[in-house]
Length: 155
Length: 399
Image (cartoon, rainbow over all chains, first blue to last red; front, top):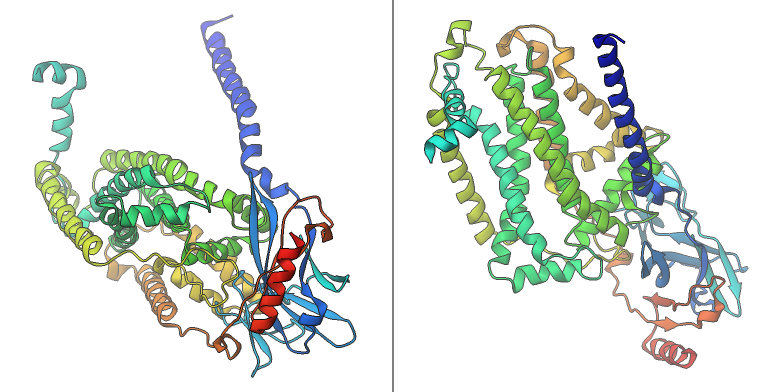
């Protein structure tokens, strides 16, 4: 083999060895960093109070906490929702998280609307977008009633 | 000893390089790059000491910052320097880039110097974004929630990117840990690497000078060392005095501890992200993506590739009407949106004006459908005193 051929071989070998080591270390490292994106959270039913107390045709603000895994800790998570009862047992529970960028909306009784303090979003009492930038309605949580308690599904 | 060091470190060669003359007409604006580097070092130094008393966990972060503020000697001052230093860095980097644009210093052969500089701007903003979550107060939490949600609006990979940033579905312990690692390890490494490359390119190609420099002027000005360095050091001293005064007399705000259910809080980012926050108000419904993704991304790409888009050799501003117009519009828009964002009225709603009674009710854990053993608390602001007492008894009975 000529000197030039040998040197070309060495250059290719250096690149291959470097590339292999980078892949061997890089794939697990990248997987380590981005794995949370594919991790599925556990869903659970959380009671938000007794049906008798929550029964109301207007929106009630309910804050509740529940325990869920957050990385390596079992954290107490806080949530805030609006609850209303249409009167025939059909409960509506809206997440207060604005579907635009995650700020908490507020129910305004006089305007009969949910208002977002961040970018001026307005949702009507069905959660539909009336004005502002949100691309989606307010999230309506799955609910069930058992033993006189109202439960919402936490994903 | 001097000879020993000189032989091994080639100090004479280094000094000869540093004494090379700059172009004529170098003015104070040419100190902005040195000031940005000074601020980076100041942030690194103050940040390294703040880290000695900080703990990146939601249970401890807020208390740690309070501890730094109230109990660690000079803690308030060091935190003040770090906080105001971050704002100063954004201003200085912005002015530095503006100077480079106005003087046409990004043009050939300095395209890569410019590209590295824009990457350093992104790193600076990254420092700001990852830094203000660390106190774990209301502003930290909500500004981060909004900031990450903005990235989730990007098409295809937006949601994945947001989850990677958060380390999960929502801002929590993993997010804080990630942001701390980014803020104190990843970004500093990246910043110092890019600064090294930027400085190498600046020294390799030499100063671009001002637009009125002729080719004969390029090496007939004052020497970089000590003349220019002295001016830079005076600028650093003035900047340090301003920051020290701010740290002493303008306390760094620390709001209440982060509360994901506090709807009374009006989330606002740090002032240097306010223009983006305000911009999002103007794009509604299907056009939302313009504000959250298209305009910021296109703007940043245009900035990054500016030297390859503007290939004319003209540097004098009034002979570059397009560059002057676009720059003016950008500056006025950013400053205007920042002012609008800062002065935007807070939301007043009828419901929020009512006092909120809160009650804690503890329900039996066996009513849950998952195997996590925990308690749930229910708060209802409309309950009467009697109901509150009754609910407490129910909770106690169930335990």
